[in-house]
Length: 452
Image (cartoon, rainbow, N blue to C red; front, top):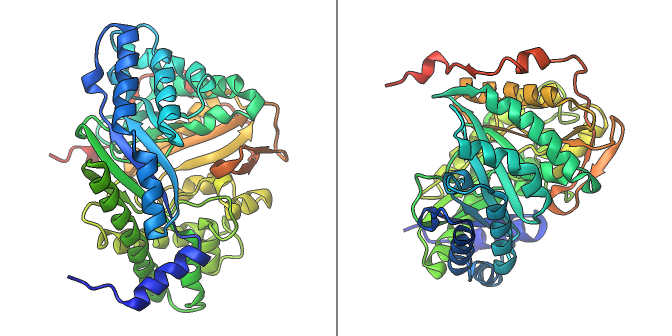
């Protein structure tokens, strides 16, 4: 048994006090399969009752652990079974969205995720109904997050679903126009979505999970940046070593919080997700880590290589620190949520194309990117298709969370507040992809999906 010595404790305290180390989220995953019925009102009541019972003490336990260990736990969240899997027999899934939102309010959590459908191969009637209801669901709720999985390495890309999601993103922006299209910040389109991701907006409790689990997402871009300041100008081997050691420390804190939460809530421990998740606060930025490696600004040539090194070292360091590492585990690059990314986008150093290239080597994808409000639905669908293709071919999770900000054009910015930050409007290509998107059908899975 490794005994923790005083210097390690002091080092961790330093990380919390000055370097913005936090546990970004404790997320309780709850299965809704036991709620199923074809009576709409009963289904909503069952869901509300189950969640409020299961997660009754989640927020309080989070606060207790925060006080006792001294580590900030920024968000407490709930994820549920993809809703389309339990709404097959009812006509209006929005009622379930509102029941989920009410449950979130009652339990006091920051977000509830799982208004989701898994349509990577094809869509059921229930899936289609749920997807078409997303604009209404996200504009009539406060805490609900929605995610749709439109492709996978095994199945290929469901282009009918991609086309539909282009429309849904546009409609969601219009339905939440008074908040700058805020609904789109709570809607993510995945390829290869994972079942145990504690981070929003993509969290859902996968069908392969048990009745309940508690997972933790750690975060500490500031800690990594400070650590790299000690190895200025040194070779990359040392950079990687430094990040690995730091990620080990950060993940250790997450493992401790997860174990405690699991014990106190009497719920099995799911995973620790070691993603470096930034916030709009100064000193809590993934972009600034890349700049610390020697780039003048995030987005310049060399950015993809720097991000590849960061992501790999975070995984290698973190995987030793927890018995169950899962979720997405790497580095997030949400533009509006990272002060360095915002700065790079404002200066024009960070384009949609460069962000797409960066997603080949990091955790997720085109995340929290604001684009002009008049961007056609087909263009949004094509952006989703490009990102899904990267995920499918590289056997990794990719995602798109773009906000076509109503009434805004390049040069403007849009304000979301809180963890969601603000975003400069990034240009998109004005050439059409409409004929491409209107073909529909399925892009076949790549050859290497035949692994059996």
